[in-house]
Length: 438
Image 1 (cartoon, rainbow, N blue to C red):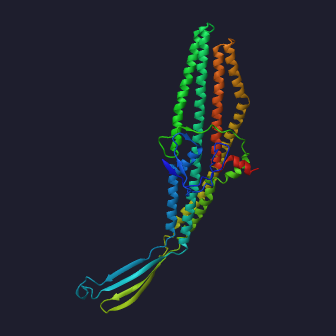
Image 2: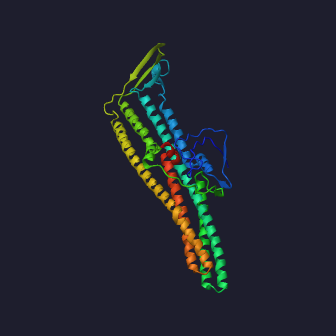
């Protein structure tokens, strides 16, 4: 499937999971680019392709895009004036005597026009325009959310590929260990039970490897779902889990957080509430209708001008309920703004804590745990070959080393998912944020 890209992918370069493109709230709505074509890959999938395919084909984004167009249409409709009305009235026909035909008929032709008072049209247009701007903000928020999800799916793909590779290495190590154990058993240096233990350990690792390959298939389908495909065509994701970098201070990121669409939209929401309240108040002023026309008297062949005005009397209905509803909705918007701010800040603090914990754990794993576990594993293999320790010690060292490797991969995943969440929340790369706050 060939997909014409109708937008300029103006993402920010970052050293994290967004190695090529950062999720940015400044990304422009779809616009025609220089005829760039993005193919859904049949072999290797890149992050660039993930984001481009997601932007162009994600079903949720298409829904929000259509909502923007619907808001445009509502804004257009809100700016239209009421249509004039043509009225034709014939009297004194179909009766009896001289009035049985049209000889004595009186025909009136007139036009009437509703005139809106209280500046209703302008206020209606303003409310509709703000609704359109809100739809734009909601689209930006959804786009950040979807791109963040797509980025995390890509991270998950890379992680499972790393796990599969690690387990494949472990299978190879276990196979070599079995050969070594078999030689010692045949030489009478070890009990046959040791070979059985090694065979069981190999079977367990092979099972885990097969399960990981099944998880990889599921992860491929999840990634493809972001651009609406049920059956992925790509085979694997390109690259490895990126390296980690230090994160900016929490106060620096909080300053950028205020630009989040989920927070920024509420200024427009409150403005729309005020506009709706103004519109509701304007409806207390009744609109008038004026009409004018000509009347024909067939009996005397005379003509006369007719005109009039219709003025509603606001005795019982002064739009009291509408004004109260608009006022309550405005108050609700203020409270929803506060609730949204608290929710985003709570999410921000949670993500920042997870990001910090993951980063510290990665540093500890790299500094001492992984090197130590590898050293013990290699030493145990040599010691077993020399007959200094039994196989259980080798198996324990092997398990400790590879569990440490798995823990390292899981922690990398947690770090990059948290980093992706944070970048989706602040609308830009964390590395860009560090540069801006220097």
